[in-house]
Length: 297
Image (cartoon, rainbow, N blue to C red; front, top):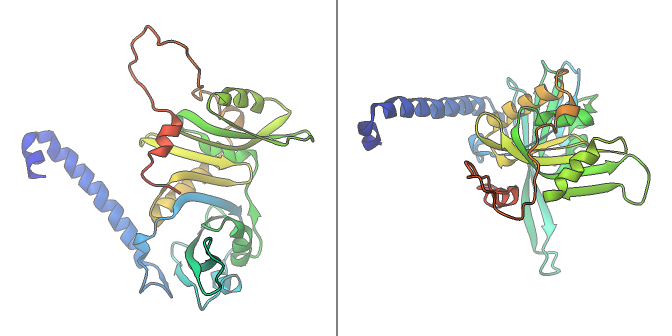
């Protein structure tokens, strides 16, 4: 560090800004963590939790939530819970036993831990859920609120807005006409056909996943018609909270139109010989990028 400072005066400014950014994030996370209380505070540090960037959102106009009802869905004696009433974030960590694959013994089982998170943005009238158990979303929301409505449909794809140089890794289409084949998944060179098909009236988008740039660097984003939005990163609780708000603002923005979402998407084209012009930039294929991700979900 001392050597970098001595090499060039610009390092003084750059390293100072980087340090301030890191310290600022740490202070924000520490403040959030200090606001939690519950049964698991002594054994698990909130700052160490790293949920996947994934969420399902539910509309609710409730004036209050009933997070205390979590014991109706989870076993109070086995689970740990955390609540930050100022930030409206509720967390449950749940043990789950499953059978082993290599023997048929009742005395031996696998023990996994599920993470369930709820963040209620009262101002926006929405609650965001994140869970390692995807089957629990609706029950979880209905446990916390008297009345909720899952957000789904075409507007979910608005979360792709603002992702520049988007390269779609896979795209699923549902047929709007009853027939033997209701769903098709497209990858690679077939993405071109899928984008063309999605603009016709005989099918609609089911799910999309791709990679692009959002102004802060390279990012991944996926979304489904059923309402799930996800990425291929794991982050701290405060970052997940901001990510939820950011994507929800896109979903409800009336100035973003889903018909324009796939305009400007990079289309894969097969070439049989090397172009004569010199390349000024070469991007790795999505498949290679995904295989070399530092974090897997």
